[in-house]
Length: 562
Image (cartoon, rainbow, N blue to C red):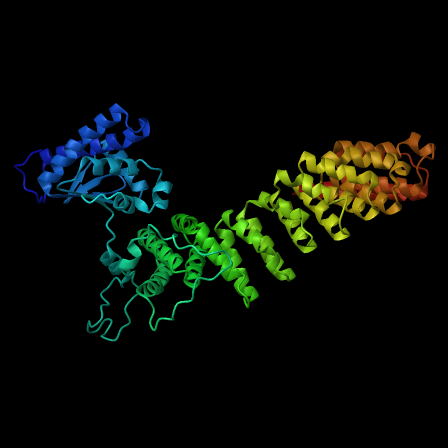
């Protein structure tokens, strides 16, 4: 390292620039090596030792080496590094994706501290974010001589102030009485240590001992009141990112204090940001990850305790359930334990929505055996929406037992799941179930245009007596075949109205008229030609033929226009 140069440069010095770029290249090599070699590998250790030598010399020479990391270049004291170096640009992009925009090496940086930094920088960007970012991870490991991304609250405040001097007390601008703009405050000291934030968990369903109400809000409450408006208004992604990290730390404090009211406010705001179409992708990503970071089992248990507190309004229940569902499958277990608390149809509808959004529907399967038909119906609706394949056997069993309402819900669930096992369970209902259930299954096949059901439906028409097909079921069968359409359905319908069948008088005119009408619903151009060529002597069937042809022609013409 050239020690003859001044430490404060105002113009690029080529030798110093080359030395710093070599240092950055060694740093890049050290970070990449973590991904290639397992911990303790001799080559990994050798690479880290070589890179550390450069870092140690530089930090000793400068006393404090501060590097600003851009997307494609590094800046040291107005000296731009890496403009012609692919290695430096690669390092910049690697660190930039991990939200590391500043590195400060102090004299006395140790090998262990540098190695900790290299391992942290090699983490996946999302994992690094969820662990608090580079600066928090280094602090957790006791790194004292290597800093990253110092939280510059003064800079955040300056960003929040009006662009053209509106400072309090300036004559002719803001005036002495002007209200200051929203600012992100410094984090209170009591929030800094959150390592044992979940140590004081309380029993599910029990409130912690009530504390005496303070006369004034705590610094943490005041900090949140000032941060949330800024997060709602800012359009600067860097400011939002740092503000969200502060909110996460405040959330940990509120969890420790069992202050669920303020935690609900945090989660509600983050959820609104994550689903706001006006916000950019970066805003939504930060909000969503923050929600996952906050959604620990302790938080979920606390929110559930609030949820089942007597006197909650439906709007409050709706809000709490939405928050729980955002926090993912971990919320399903605790909702299940208190599902019997919700009695009204509206509340159970809210529970259904929450369970579906949270995921983990397979955890609800044991509830299919509940004695409460309302809960069973709720679970069946969730199964139909989530479609867990493990649930088919349990759902199918309910099509043969329980009330008509439960059987109907079970059929709907199987139709929505619609895998091979679910369809087979539905086919088994057609020979022996009551007419209402069979009619519902048949019409649902048409609604979903389930082509795989066509052979079964045609067979029911061919063997009407064996299947005890009533006139109502016959009508449903023909309408469903017409709605499904396709070659197999139309060939089966033409079989019924062909001349040989007709002259044998095997089917009455009502049957044949329904078959002709179904052809009008499902015929393509080739089937339409065959429908036109049919020789029918009965005036009733001829009228049905004309109506079916017109219907098919109009439908095909409309489809062609689209």
